[in-house]
Image (cartoon, rainbow, N blue to C red; front, top):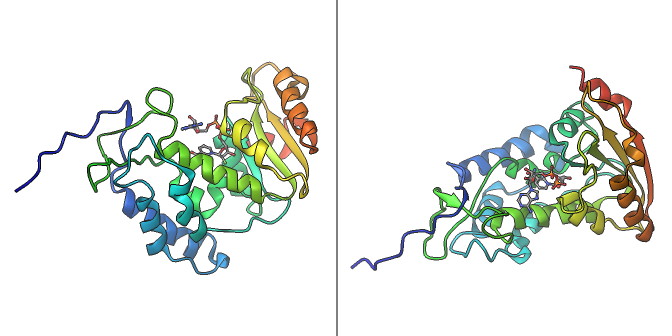
Length: 250
Ligand code: 2NF
């Protein structure tokens, strides 16, 4: 006899990406075998299972960092000092840059970021299935959803692991060039370790053709400078960093 179950809740965000599990597995093998074989052995089957186990059969508004603990342990990966590249409101440009500068890493150039980028996922406490219909929207439903908690957790680790001189690509064509509510402003900046991060250098990029303003001296970038000063991390800033400027022309 089948027990009656209430239908899955309708959330405001889009549902789990179709074929999520297969995409995660495929990306894991692509990354470990082709993109970065020097990383050494990673058990993609185990990683895929740990990923889905983090959110299946759980309330998608009560996701925690702990849920992703096993997944984090299975995917540890060292980024060399001086090679970490953060970004905020500049996803495309930052990734265009690391496609050329293959020695530098955004979070999406590491295994877990590579696997999850652009995907959506959530489950339901009353079902062992993924919810392909809808998932909580982080603004309209709840902030502790499996997707947001995942990005907060991996972004935190990415920042904790950074060492040497680290960089961030910021968008100088918007008013909140440094946004204190973004993942970079909320999570990454506060999880840099001053003992091993010598300096954070911001590259503030303007859209081609937009009126040039000196964004390094804007008030939002000054907020970033003050936060870092309090945290004993040196800050430097360049407007329209040349090598990235070139990418904006192609
Ligand atoms: O999807 C990703 N690859 C991703 C998502 C969130 C954070 C990557 N990150 C990491 C990267 F490593 C960057 O260094 O954080 C940094 C970028 O995040 P940001 O929040 O500083 O930059 P935005 O351009 O403001 O946001 C990036 C994307 O994440 C979404 C946002 O809508 C955009 O699509 N986002 C931001 N915060 C949340 C949140 N709390 C969020 N989505 C869900 N919940």
